[in-house]
Image (cartoon, rainbow, N blue to C red):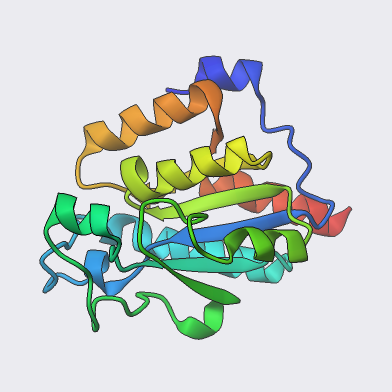
Length: 197
């Protein structure tokens, strides 16, 4: 689906220089627990991939930063008519598998969080993005990263949305001007090659 974009922008971003970070967006009970009012049907299909991506990142010494969506700012409350309370703000992955957890109140993981400070601390220039929802928080974070000068790689089979059309439309848009679309196997292979080089 993204072959034209990949011809123009192959996955040639250097992943071996210790400059890569993984952002796990909103992998929390609110979207992953079937009892939640915001549960994303079928999200289990990528949950194993997300956990595997975290393992790969940790094995390659790639910092893992998780965000948790609370949606507490006024505009988000007005739009969605709710906020996200405990227990729905609990991570769906083990807390011990991530290096940092950032609470956020909007779609953008950079907005009023410490994300950019952490990326600077780790001297990260390329981010891998995984999580939910592709067309809202993941896309907004990817665009925000791009305009701040970061290289962005969307790990397609580690992303999920409430609607397949939203998911693919978002990725097509990002592939055109903001991000490289990759997958778990490709990222794993590249990071393994880096480790062995």
